[in-house]
Length: 177
Image 1 (cartoon, rainbow, N blue to C red):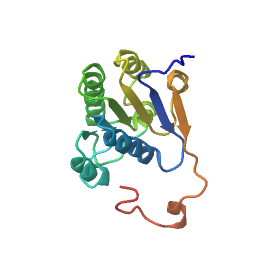
Image 2 (cartoon, helix red, strand yellow; image 1 turned 90 degrees about the vertical axis):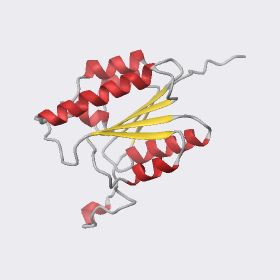
Image 3 (cartoon, rainbow, N blue to C red; image 1 turned 135 degrees about the horizontal axis):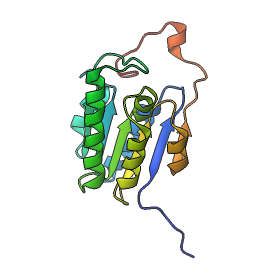
Image 4 (tube, rainbow, N blue to C red; image 1 turned 45 degrees about the vertical axis):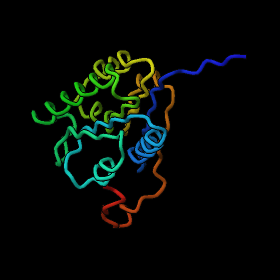
């Protein structure tokens, strides 16, 4: 009996809890451990303090590209530079998804970028459609669009039950960034 196994999956990590990017990074580490080449494109994130940037430099076959400012984006009213960086991120994703250099392409915070108006749903759907059949793809961020959920092979929702921020604990290196 032969079972259909998709060659490349679309996976989404969404929800209001902490850990969506962290889950994607765990998947990246697992993939690199098996000799796969991984590209993570971080939308809406900029700045050298993120621990994953340092770790990626130590892992052959893992690259992270940031396409965001180190400041917050205004929901529904992104600035021109935010829009320009988001467009660049989509172009990097197009190139990565159609080329043969990467086995796993991750779009970190793409769901938030869509929700905040930095990218259009049609453009994100086109990325899913144009990717090489053997390329896995991960989309992270809160508020995943129902159409992306419908098209995905796997969706995990991270639900906040309790968070240390609400107890007054500030963001810490190695935990939040």
